[in-house]
Image 1 (cartoon, helix red, strand yellow):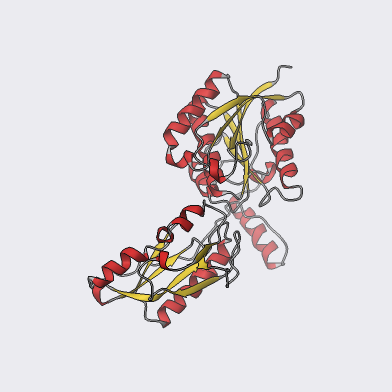
Image 2: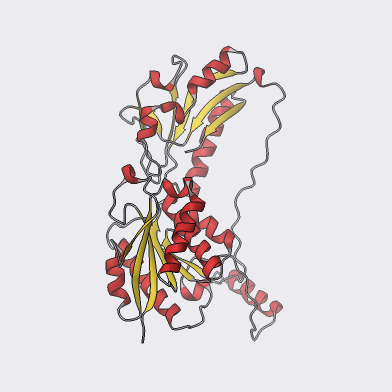
Length: 354
């Protein structure tokens, strides 16, 4: 049987080009497997062949998204690709975003089946669910390559690709193990809805496990605050998720899955450059922030605006690190900061995104 032609998409790190310093590398390609593609090819055996690896820098892709996608599309056409594998990206947000975008673009442009892998809390999973693309499958992985992280992820991908090559029908997420996309499918069953609902109720009342047919993920509703009528009468605070904190990291922020926040005095500065800061984060190139900390908290501009009496600036900077943060931890941090702001009479906050 002829091997199915596969293209593998990687970022610059896993392609072996370099780290953050090579984040601006444009789309390029190499025949055959690279990096994790080599053990993946071994796992494929005789069912599939990685005929080309396309790669791109983590910074280049979001900055030149359309150009990057069109270049990758042309590579897929040139090599007559039948299946795309992207990643795995684990919990890397920028990499995960690129994997989902590449998968969706090639799925809609060429009708390809696409497989990627990432941690269920990778921010890119939300985009994957919103696309609801029936030909794109994201398999759950661990948070990183540590331990058997890469080995397990590649094994899952290889098994799924094997099933795709046999033209077997792909079942539901619960049956096949991929991350649910929120696609509802009509099926014929032996019991009517009333009977199934009664069965679930009885299982719940008895304290036994049961599975709902329509899982619903809900988050606390955040009301939109009222418009500030006169900003000049408001005390405005600066906040950031870039992990800004005094040199030495006194509050022990972590680069990933951080659970802490802090507030640091800034009223004696006219610019963030007047202080000495560390930036603890895993999701962006912190060298830019070290060069000009005002990117993370625009204190220089806010001081100018305060002198023009546009508002009164709160004397402390609120800070946390959002890299790979768990939803519950981020909610806890947000509530803690909000309580402190309310107690301090802060009427508005400029929260700078990274």
